[in-house]
Image 1 (cartoon, rainbow, N blue to C red):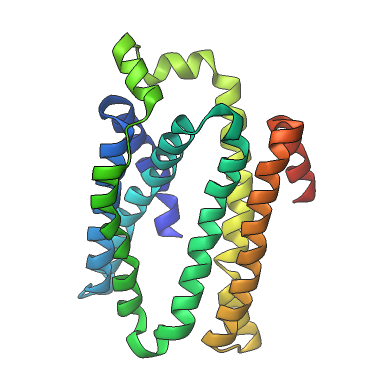
Image 2 (cartoon, rainbow, N blue to C red):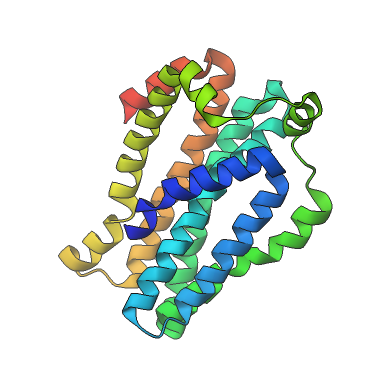
Length: 236
């Protein structure tokens, strides 16, 4: 929970940096930053050191989603943005699914420190991003026009939309993390399930989450984004 609590700090910090320096280099910085603190978490000598490293990791993770989604959505053609946003969103439960499989297979052998070491593997993506991923064309065009990217004028002009998005995301994150993060602990403490069985259960509900992301992304191409959001809210 401490890691989640500081993510807004990272979102603001790295989001502003992405506006100034570009999406791609800040995304790479994000990955490097959270990899360092993931490794340090694995090698924590004390519980207090572990908490400090997790706080710093949370700051880095707070920047990943906004910067990565901006780079992706600003690069994808408009006609495919709904579907691709669903696929992009499906990456979250896909990662959770992969983590569940890794946990079920290796936790008993490597323990919690080994799981953190495995969690640092995304650093291998850095060379690919550097050589293969182009910078956002939207950001490049804005820089060429020398547009003002100051935060306060945007908030004053679009404060209703910003407030709406903050509330929507707060609701969905409350619903998401309040279930998926606590559910494995509930299964272990209340029902006495072993790690292998908990992993199998997590695999199934994350497969469903992946299918849901792709389905609603595709649906938004047909009925529009607002109607899709309303139907998803009602379903939740």
